[in-house]
Length: 121
Image 1 (cartoon, helix red, strand yellow):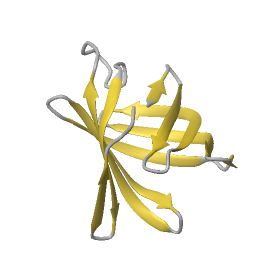
Image 2: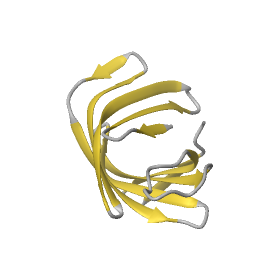
Image 3: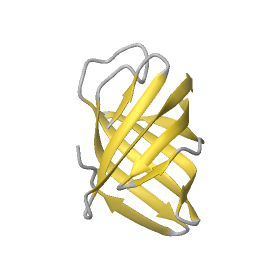
Image 4: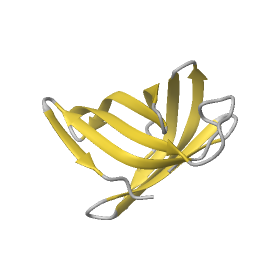
C-alpha cells in the first residue's frame, strides 16, 4: 500500500510467504508519466534504514489502472527491476496519484529470471 499526499508518500507491505512487514516514508515529485520517490527512512522486519534512497517510477497506464516500473533497485547485492500492477478502486481524477490503488501483481526481474508473487493488501 502506498499513500501519497501533496508532498509526501508512505508505504507499508507484507512480503509473503515469510510475512515480514516493511514500511517507509519520504517525499516525491511527479512529471507526466514519471514519479521520483525520495525515501528518507524505511524498515523491514526489525532492521531500520535511515540512508536516503531515490527511485524513479515510469508509470504505464493500463485498462484497469497503472503499472509502475522501477529499475536499478538494490536487493541484497543485486540490482533488480520491480514491476507492480495496480487496479483503480476509486473515481478517475486529474492526477495519476489522486486515486486509491490496490496492488494486484508484483514482479522482480534479476537478469533473465522473473519472479512473480501476488501482493498482499
